Image (cartoon, rainbow over all chains, first blue to last red; front, side, top):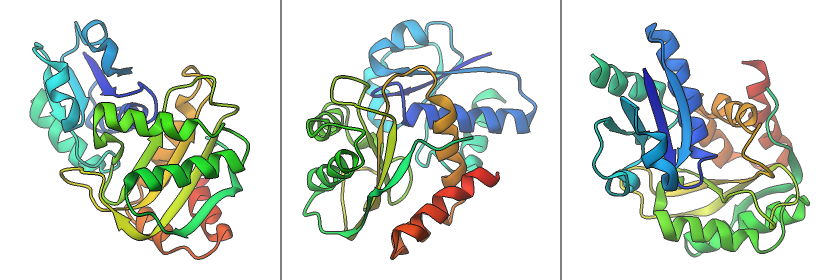
Length: 90
Length: 150
């Protein structure tokens, strides 16, 4: 499974999403490859992704995709991430 | 996991900012004071938000201001600015912002460990309130150092 975290610069916020998504997935026992990318490279980075993690500002720019787009409000709330990932993957 | 360097000169507490741009400029000054960014870095951080929206407000009350690596970045480093009066960034859930972190990175590669260390600090849901209430740089350094233990 491939998961892509998207933000404006591809560092910083998407890095935090990646780190915390990996923690949650490990806890859930789900094997996935999580990468961080900037919005400019979303088409290439997320072409074969099942899930895109991002904030609401980027939903329009991500555009049409086969991936589940998960909007995260609090990047540090692993319970929120866990709940939303479970819903998308379950 | 090591945090990006947080110098005492990059900690500004109880700053007065009239809006989010002013808050990001203070963060820029803090990064300049600790020698990791040039004055133009503040403009780049502001441009990221103008271009992409207030997504840098990644948790209630907390913004992570940053731009891409580039000529305005001198070294890797972190700044912590707390605001006397919270400001709105226009985020649908996480406004208003009291704690603004500034992050300067010289390259995208190899930054992930330090990002993980930032996550370690703030996955503790008390950290933002503790920083907002901090009255000394030592206190901020102690809160930020809690990452080293996890």
